[in-house]
Length: 345
Image (cartoon, rainbow, N blue to C red; front, side):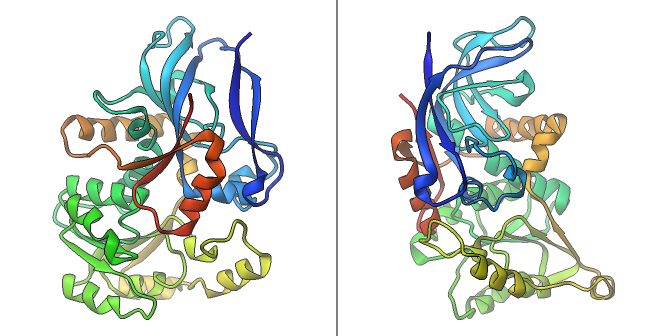
């Protein structure tokens, strides 16, 4: 009888809520595929799940966090399109922090040739985010100018590359001078270092004096209104996160702090949007997990860009699954670049 390791959050909380347990491996059902997981991506959304503030996770505890993984197929049923030993990358609506995962074939793809398991596991969530933000929410066009916040992180790095592949001009914002090299190496046309005083907006204006056709923001509070004000006619502000509502370095968010953050989120008047010919949209990438055909289309297009050498393997920092709490702490610090992943023996 085979056993697996998986991380369980029995009830929302701090880093201690992440428990590593040993259980029997899942059985492969009809039409499904089982993967022996070698690496699982760590996303900021996983931290929100742990804290109990992720809407899609409410009412599902105890649960295992994780939306993406890579590994080797070790259990199939006829007609799946995969065989034992295939190196694959996949997505799952929670459950990725486990050494064995069972999913439907539409949730799996062959891993890019030559990529490590860590690189493959770091790919889906941020590139699905970038694809949806650029091609569905903003619908960018060749030659448009876009602004990407948090451009040295996982989603930000993906947005820079996918925007360049779409032939956009990219202005990237990073949180410190030590991170400037990340979006610059990925092809960003200009890189600006953000400061708390907000004086960085002058450099942003100098980089795009005619304004932006699209702004991509996961900060969620202080940069939303200034970004909206810098949209050119027909410009789109796309919101896909609210990182500023959670204090860096803390393993959970207090309700008073959340309430204060919520009160500071700007509101946009429909009359204002119409008068200025600008739009605001938001999305949650978990939406794609309820649209498997759309997720499959998005991943297919992103992997095609990999094959054309237009997307680089993600930069990763690996933590053994036994140190999952350390991975969450590192991500919440705001000091990391690229993607963090958990590894399984």
